[in-house]
Image (cartoon, rainbow, N blue to C red; front, side, top):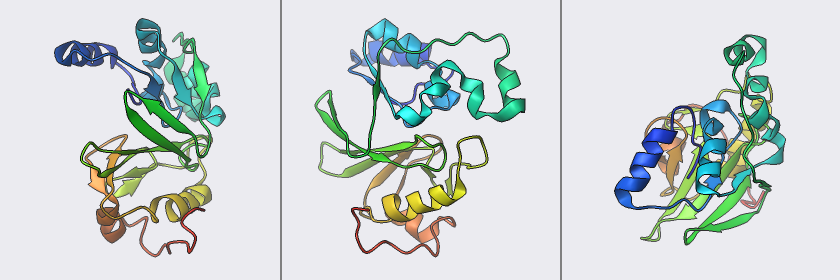
Length: 200
């Protein structure tokens, strides 16, 4: 399960029952509330751990912290609990869950602890769960606390552009896309040079 946000519990529970699935773990691409709000409840219900980059962990207990003074008001009177078992993600981590291998890449910019999850489809194609780092035709905002435009541009140049063009991107919002499509049409990727060493 990836990024269970607000009001996600009923829909996820229904889908799990419909397809007779069980939850192996919860992956969080970053700490913003619209990606983590239901993580604690679902982790408790299914008794599974949650993985998140440590830089964004503070948002689990204080979701308004990443929204600035005005955004924090949205959470006045809202009680939020952390998941019972939070495990740290780090650059180069590999997670094996439900027979799927996830390669973790730190991708700061939208938040300091944003990560990308790379995986391979059953057919051998490459998948990228990009959270709010990359969207179809856009990127995640960098003007909230913890965001950094310079780091975002470095992430795009060093972490996104070197990926194979056929990589299918599953963003945190909006439609799927591919790396090739975004290289050709995403205005935020225009003019960025692919680094000589793709391991950067």
